[in-house]
Amino acid sequence: MSTDTSSEESSRQAVPGVVRGRGTASSGPHAANRWIALAVLSLAQLMVILDSTIVNIALPTAQHDLGFSTDDRQWVVTGYALVFGSLLLLGGRLADLFGHKRLFLIGVAGFAVASAVGGAAGGFPMLLAARVAQGGFAAMLAPAALSLLSVTFADDANERGRAFGVFGAVSGAGGALGLLLGGILTQSVSWRWCLYVNLVIAVLAFVGALIWLSAGDRPERVRFDIAGTATAVLGLVGIVYGLGNAGSKGWTDIWTLGAVVAGAALVVVFVLIERRADHPLLPLGVILDRTRGTAYLAVGISGIGSFAVFLFLTYYLEDTLRFTPIQTGVAFLPMVGLLIIGAIVSGAALMPRTGPRPIVPVGCLLAATGMVLLTGIGTDSSYAGGVLPALLVIGFGFGLIFGPAQNAATSGVRSHEAGAASAMVNTAQQIGGSIGTAVFSSLAASAITNYLHVHAATATRAATLADATITGYHLVFWIAAAVFLGSAALAAVLFRSGPLPVDADAVPAAAF
View 1: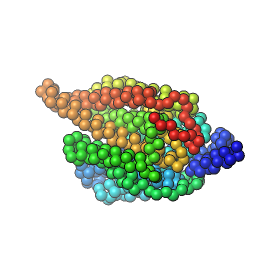
View 2 (view 1 turned 45 degrees about the vertical axis):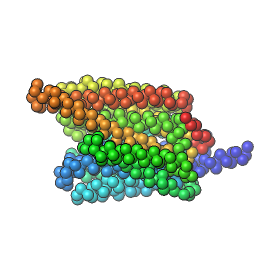
View 3 (view 1 turned 180 degrees about the horizontal axis):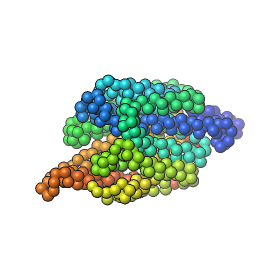
View 4 (view 1 turned 90 degrees about the vertical axis):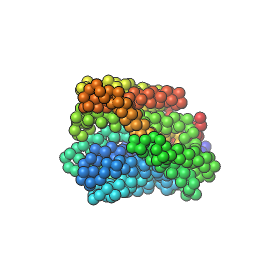
């Protein structure tokens, strides 16, 4: 008995960032520390999520100020997404090998420096280089933050549920808050502050991490999986790059279809390499676990559908309803409020009792319902009557999806693989978002073109274009509804019933 106790205690102390002491989750000095640690990790996550949308609002002004072309403007967004998405697995594994807190601090500091360079950019090359660097450091920061959260709240199901509810709310709401903050900063100060604002957030997160995050024991050094790393990075680069070209070059262009096919082939090669590797970049047991594998599917598929809200509803509010950037950001706040409520309620009250199986499908069904409601908007719809009800339903649905799915995606994983498991969450969401952007943009453009061709002689050009645009939006929202229905069905069938395991190093992997 004493040997088992000693072994269990030793295992727990080896978890980087975990607050030690089983059974003391709700009492003692460490209880407060872990909630401060949650605030630090959520702040860093917010910084990464904000930059996926805050720069979008600033781009037209930055383009005018720096004098770069519309084709170049796309790469300010794509460059960040390309590097971030392709390096996430590498960043997660580096966190496992060299320490989650160490990679977290490097990521925060590097992201801040890159943001400062971008804010001071005197031309397009400097701005693009800064965005690429932001993506690289975000690929270190994001999986390190999620893995630190997972191991810090590994020993109490109730606290873990609440913590992931808060973290999921931040992850889901960050994109909408980025639209609001980007509009305020661009109109009130300068587009450059959409990048400089990261310095304030980064300083708070960095100092907080130094004080409140435990370093844990440094994992044992092992041989690095060079072949797996190369195929994973190149494969993800091909997929994200190809999808990014779909809107401008079309699906049959060699730089679209060729890049996606080559990237997918390299991912297959990566899996074959990982099956035989002694020290794999991504231990396959991480994704073959039924609960975690289903969570990655849910996050990826929901990532596809969620872009229909943030991208095309933004277009509708600004182009059709003539909202200013600030008004557009404010318009999303009710959705953010319901998302936060849904995430916290599901994390604190439901996840510890039921696990993700009944929660995530309901969230997906609510999101699908909200998308169907959006198909009723028209050129003369009001925000209060046409948009707001859908946003409230979608927001609560998102809250039931992302927090519980992130929790499930990192549950039951051993501490030395927490970085890889966390990286897979971000990779699934990033790839899902890239697919959603490419597919929905292409479908909307085709629908608009077809409508204009059919109705060109029946109305004025302006009226026809407005109706055609709404038709394109409707198609996107219908398909997004179908995507969320598919995610609901998969989650209901594949998730295991019951609460999640709470002690990562005491739970063996459970394969499909």
